[in-house]
Image (cartoon, rainbow, N blue to C red):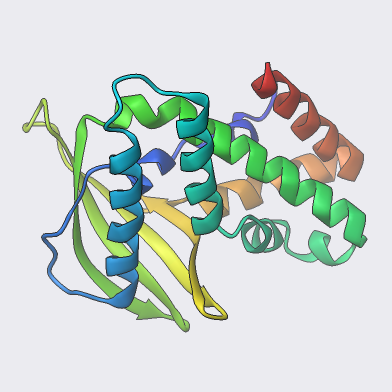
Length: 202
């Protein structure tokens, strides 16, 4: 059985771009940026039926928002430094493919949620934007607390972690990567990711 945390996002990453409200307790450049990405996706979703072009445009927005290389580097830790340039490039490419597919697959279900930015704070030179996701169809359902760790890469802002109800996507990836590396080594990890990426492409 594959380690599913590598193969799909379990932390509601699609909520990153869906239903973000302008209501917030504290404004920041990062929260404003997050809302701007949402606006682009909502505009694309106004069409009645998803198209190949629409999916490609949404994927382009997601790729511009999440720094897959930095996420992979932090998740691998010391193992990142042990790989050569070609190995790193393949790992980042596969990680990006798997995350993008998970986003597309989960997008429709997350349209049920309304998300409010409720604040932002500075942590270690990066900004954490706090949001609250409420089910539009069932207001009695407890809201989901989602935080996005955003850092500045040159002149651009990018997401490097998503924390859902206190559970970090980055830490989950790190835990699973380390477990597979310990048991199966680098080739075992890459083999699993290649296989899943191939399945996702079909």
